[in-house]
Length: 284
Image 1: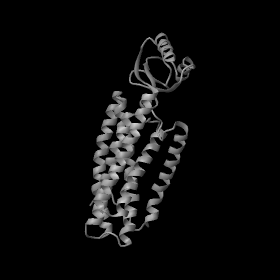
Image 2: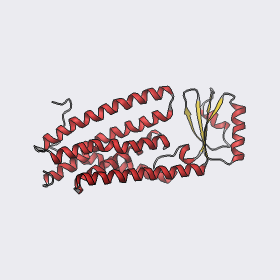
Image 3: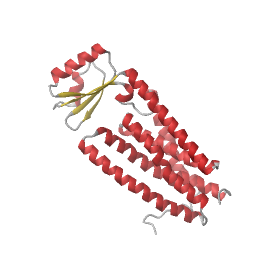
Image 4: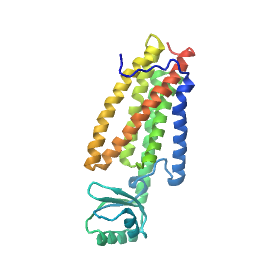
């Protein structure tokens, strides 16, 4: 007997899907608002928007720091492992030279972290979007070839799509920017998001027995798989966050968000569609 009981027999498919579908619609609205504001579903970081960042050691408040840089496009002030990190938007070379001089004279203990030209950032942005699209299409093709049945295959693809959309929306809410690192995490999430969906679909379509037993058995195996991954990624997040390794804690944070929403989309949305499909005479 599993530690967590999973019994959706008494719930109609539409009721099971209601919460994930509402969250998906809200997430799409949030991403739409962010596209209107920034041109991207998730707020782009320096890697994609271009700009410059510095690490400074100071006792000044954020408002005091902003007052120093009123003539420059200061975008974000973040707490770093050894001080504050300042992120500026793209600038012409003359303005950048002036900023360098101001940072050096005002904050003797400073260090440039990154500098990305706006054009190069746009190229990075286009390549990242292309990589995500190709990866998602490739995953969808593999799923359809594997199951050769429209409804179950579409359920897996829908669940993976919802995982990506909801994760991106949460990134906007909590302030995680889209960088090369978080893009890599989203690419990894495409793989992570379909493993439990494929397990569920395979158990339901290709095994004999009662539907409720097949769903419960798939859930027990799938939730163990997700839990072990969640624990490992949580450890990576804790170590990298307190160690000040920003790119690693951002990657692990995105994966944790994605794994959490995947539980919702797999065991409510995908399971509901499969339940409806089998009850209508599909599968074995």
